[in-house]
Amino acid sequence: NAGVTQTPKFRVLKTGQSMTLLCAQDMNHEYMYWYRQDPGMGLRLIHYSVGEGTTAKGEVPDGYNVSRLKKQNFLLGLESAAPSQTSVYFCASSYSAGEQFFGPGTRLTVL
Amino acid sequence: GEDVEQSLFLSVREGDSSVINCTYTDSSSTYLYWYKQEPGAGLQLLTYIFSNMDMKQDQRLTVLLNKKDKHLSLRIADTQTGDSAIYFCAVMNRDDKIIFGKGTRLHILP
Image 1 (cartoon, each protein chain N blue to C red):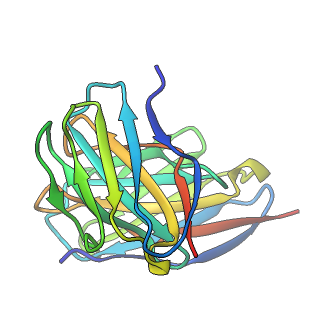
Image 2: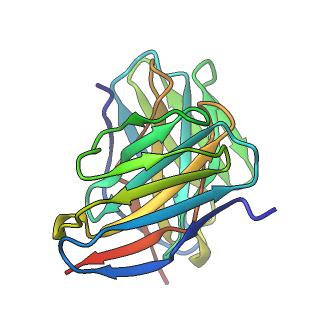
């Protein structure tokens, strides 16, 4: 049981490049989330999903898109990366609206 | 919307008790959580408490909830070097969304 995994672990992008972060969970959870963590800002919710085929905006959705085509996967896309998107990105999943299980994080630097 | 506040830093001597405090604004919050984040890792749930409870104890951890003051605390007894981490308070609001505080960095002094 791998829990929540994230790919890649590290990435460096140039401004304007695009990329997709992959989150996978093997716990059959309905809910999945993408957060970003910045120093002094705590965790901020970017987008979330309450089930396969659904997505919703969180607190800081601008500049990001998501897709949940399969229940076990939640993808976070950056179409045109900006330096302000330099951050550590965490994916999480939960069975319902309760306890969330977190992945190990992806450290993204945008130059 | 819901706001969750916690102090950013706490220093404690090894062997002493650590008390991390959290305040929140939504009085209808149902579940309240404490997560731990070790360096370079994701968050891990430490413990949680239902809003109809005042206290929950789990080995070295004690959670106290004061609903009237909307105050949650986490006490770690006999603090060890392995307890050095960032501790996040999190609260489920009336829309079933979990709101996280900014985290308290616990530093252990020898």
